[in-house]
Each structure stands twice: as structure tokens, then as C-alpha cells.
Image 1 (cartoon, chains in turn orange, purple, red, green):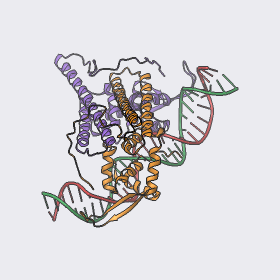
Image 2 (cartoon, helix red, strand yellow):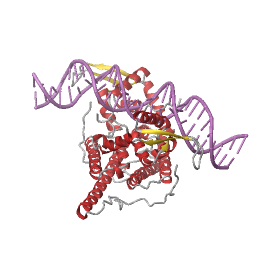
Image 3 (tube, rainbow over the protein chains, first blue to last red):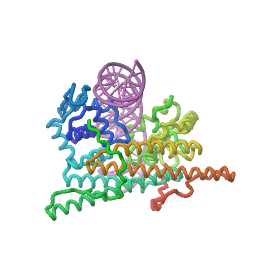
Image 4 (cartoon, rainbow over the protein chains, first blue to last red):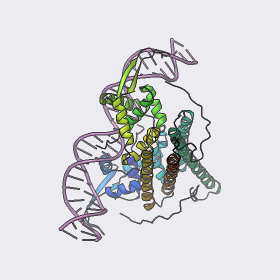
Length: 209
Length: 209
DNA sequence: GTTAGCATGTAAGGAGTTACATGATTTT
DNA sequence: AAAATCATGTAACTCCTTACATGCTAAC
């Protein structure tokens, strides 16, 4: 079975690979990682965790009093089965991986993805967007000013995303060439951002658990 | 009641205000108007049409043989009640109107919206996006290269959209000033696009029905 | 001591998709 | 005559949100 969606489950597993977390904290991290446009609700997250428990991908450990806080929490940790599922799914670079949500999630875990899989996902995503552009450009028939403007803006946005992907693919490719040519340790791409980076004025925000 | 979503229904009513259409054709136009990223399915459209029939917003007329084609179609036309509902909803410039889908739909029908309502929707949408930016910029704590890059790109995209809205607001404002000052007929904004327009190389596509 | 934020859940429902079904008409 | 496209629908299912419920703990 090609496994339909399961984006949320995979994102949770990806986060739990770094460290065990409880639901409340998971939600915060998921909102950072993906979404931030759409805040994930608890009504979505907690049932997902229950499902994952039943699937045997995660274990729950109830903490009563630990070092700093004596607040009761249910901490989830990933199981070997969960790790295996995550690895299998994240390696799957088929059409499901170039859809919006799915792509974002996979991209967020690219550090734990093989270089050739990264490449296939980036290229697949780009051709998916290219298809959209072709469709949009061939069917523009709006006489209305606002409709035209809306479509123009939408096309601009997708074109921008295609350029972003192209830059990333280029960065991946040169990084890979370096590795093959020099036998140097794979430092990976993105050591220098492909476009003008936002000046990092943000608060470091070093809150752990 | 503030009326939850009903984006699809409103979009259908908006299209039917121009001319009566059958389901198949409606889907095509809806995909142009909104979506084009997400193709609307018939499993969504036809039940919506049934609901709208029951609500009395539209009538159905079965055509058997007309001028060009003798193919059987069910053509829907908007009723006075439907027009009233559409007008009321489209004038409602509350928070529901600045959400992604809802905003796009309302924007697409801006030609049939009062200038002051347009302004409120554009400004509301912009401050909604501004909130997202503030949240995203204050919580950036990713050490991972790819996560950082993903968030940077997401922030860039929203910043771009904010600028787009700012230009549109400016265009609306000057258009309104002109109208007030000269007593000239309201030619509206967007007579010249605020940014570099895509060179219109698209096929005119004059397919009607 | 009360408010704000932490923490976990459930039930009902909204909005959509996919898969299934069927058949007419036009094009090749 | 076959294939593509037009045309309309239903049933099951997915995924998510909102509203409801509950209670603890930290800060003011």
C-alpha cells in the first residue's frame, strides 16, 4: 500500500527521533516546523498520538516528578518500529512527496535524508509546480481586472518557488560534485544560502522542554 | 450567526450572477477562479449544488436540445434569494474574510464589492499576515540548516504578499481620492498594475459554454 | 487567591477527496 | 468502432477544527 497521507504522524516521529516529548511541547514544535500558518489543534494531535501508540511506533512514559518540574506529563518516545516506519516513508520519493504539505515535512527532515533522495524530491516538486504554471498560463481567460490580478500574483508566487527550488537543486548538485571529486566529507549544501537571507534579528529562544 | 465557511457556495453564486451554468462548466470556472492549485472534485461540487437548491439560492433548468448542442445538461441559475445572500455575505468584511481561501474568493469578486468594503478586506488581510510574520520571526529557533531555510523561504513569501497588499491598498486609496476630488466616474484602481506584470503571452481562450 | 499558562483529552461536525457508477456525444 | 471528453451523481472515508471538559502549577 502506497500509504496515503500520514504527514502529521511522520512529523511527530521525526521530532521524537531527536528527543522524547510530551503532547503540549510537540504541538509547539510542530507549529514551528510546519504550519506556522495553520496552528495544529490538540483535537488533531492527541488522537494521532493514540493511533501511533496502537501502531507501536511510539511508547508513552508518564513522568510524575523529575529534576526541575514535578508536573505530570505523558512523554512519548519513538520505538524501533517507529524509526523503521519513519525511515521507510521519508525515503519514499514518489508523487506523494511533492504535494504541498508532504513536501514541506520531508524538506524539514532533509538532514536525515540521503542526498539522492533529496534530489529526487526537489526535482519532483519543481516539475509538479511547473505543471501548475503551464496549466495556469494556458487557461487565463479572465476579463475582470481583479481576477486577472489575482491570477498574476498567484503565478508570480509559483514562479518564485520554482526559482527557489532551482537554486536548492543547484546547491545540492555542486555539494554532491565536491564530495565525489575531492572525497571530502559531505558538508552538504546550504553552507551559504542561495538567496538573500533575512537578517537574523530574532531572539535565540533557548527553551528546552 | 457569523456563517462559518460557505466559500464554495459563494463562489458558485458569484459565477452564476454572470450567467447560468451547468455543473461541469462550473467546475472548470471554479478551478480557474480559485484553486488552480487544488482541482475541485465533482464529489464536492454536486452535493453543494443540491444543498444550494434546497436553500433556494439557485434553480435548476434541464435543457434537452438547444442551438448548438443537443446534449442534456442541468443548468443552474441564481434566484433573488441567492443574489441577496451573496450580496450580504460579500459585504461582510469581518475576520472570516481575511482567511486564505475566503480572501481569495472575495478578492475575485471585488468588482462587485463597494470600495470601502474592499479596503477593509485588504487591510484586514494584511494585518492577518503581519501577525503571522511577527509570530514566525519571534519563534525562530531552528539549528537545522534545512528547517532554517524552509522558514526563511516561508517568511519571504509572506513578506512578498504583504507588499502586494500594500500596493493594492495604495492603488485603491488613490483611485478613491481621484473619485472624491474630481467627481470623476469611478474608474477604480488597477488601471495600471502595481508591479511588473507578466507579459501576456497566453492564448485568449474564448470558449463559452 | 485569582489569573495565566500548562497539560490532556473527547464528541460533533465541516469540508473536502477518492473510488465507484453510469451513460451520452464527439473526435479520431 | 474505439477512445476521449462531456456530464452527473453517490458512499465511504480522511483529516482537521471547534467546542466542550477537566485539572494542575506558577506568577502576580
